[in-house]
Amino acid sequence: MTNQNAVPAEAVVAIAVAAVAAAASSPMFPYPPPRACGRKKKYVSQLELGGVRISAWMESMKASSPTHAKAAAALSAVAPSVDCVLEEQSAWAMRYPSALSMIEQIVSASKGKRIVMFLDYDGTLSPIVDDPDSAFMSNAMRAAVKNVARYFPTAIISGRCLEKVINFVRLTDLYYAGSHGLDIKGPEKPRHVKAKAQPVLFQPACEFLPTMDAVYRALFERTKSTPGARVENNKFCVSVHFRCVDEKSWSALFEQVRSVLKEYPKLRLTQGRKVLEIRPTLRWDKGKALEFLLESLGFANHKDVMPVYIGDDRTDEDAFKVLRERGQGFGILVSKFPKETNATYSLKEPSEVKDFLVRLVQWKRLSMKARTKCK
Ligand SMILES: O=P(O)(O)OC[C@H]1O[C@H](O[C@H]2O[C@H](CO)[C@@H](O)[C@H](O)[C@H]2O)[C@H](O)[C@@H](O)[C@@H]1O
Image (cartoon, rainbow, N blue to C red; front, side):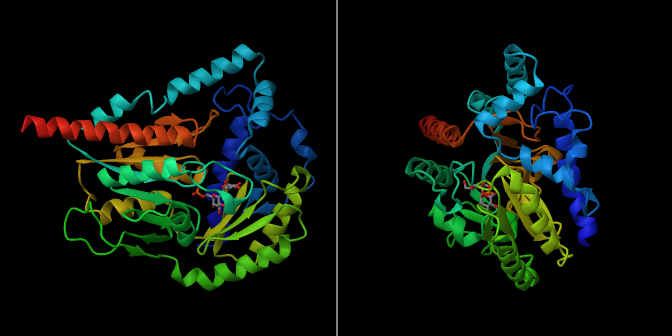
């Protein structure tokens, strides 16, 4: 697959998100703020990346990871009044109810089934911060994840490289999928596997390693003149962060990235929360990683499994989509703001993720106690 083929698939989504967001008539997409007719013309550059207008990428970059103030401003630009904003939010909350308030329904749907837990890292287990190296999870969150993993097979699926995410989480007994699922490793002594299991190790993009290394160095060199830009080597992916870049320099930064990527037709560009992500053009994502892990755990074709995936980012949508398509389990989106999603439920922030995990463990303990009493 060439870059020309690979990029549009992701970017079409970005355009769709930006376009729908810009339509004031759509109540579910309150940001980015709608553009006045003709405002698009303001973008000087109409160059294309993989057939997609750069202006669309700019819109999408603006829409990623809104801060509270920006989202509020965006909301007020779309909605005629505060009442209307509240209406939009409560409509969204009804469509994607809080997983905390739906916990009874979630656990009752799991009756006779095995819950398998999938957790994204940044923005889900750890709060979003400016410095990617300081995205630590709290000890309370670590304890909650540890307890969950005691009762349910648990995997962390992250855009970070495997080593980094393992270092942040520091828990054995978990499955880890780094680089958006391109680097998967199971625990030394798996607890929950059904049959005799092989150790889980999977790296479908090995042959891309030299390319990823080269593109990392090229991106580092090309973007170092942009104040606040940061390039992170995630082994099978490279992240170019723009969270700390002045918004006026975003298009210049995007141009720098684009000019490097022209030399790498086997790489594709996607977007996360204030981050441009460069990865191989393989048909592999967090959704595929989820399916791979279910299979590795021996649950491939089982009706008695209920996967629950919690994540906050666009890349997590691939996993939510897989769950919807399988008609199995639930996706839970972590977001304070209305967002289009394939998830079923929502949680506002990592502290609510922790509360959800704690409640799940409490329910499991109680139900195990009740079962022992009955025997
Ligand atoms: O799949 P994830 O575990 O969510 O990883 C996605 C990216 O997360 C990190 O970036 C994000 O979090 C940073 C720290 O809070 C924040 O500064 C940045 O703006 C976010 O995009 C990570 O640094 C990236 O490499 C991951 O791709």
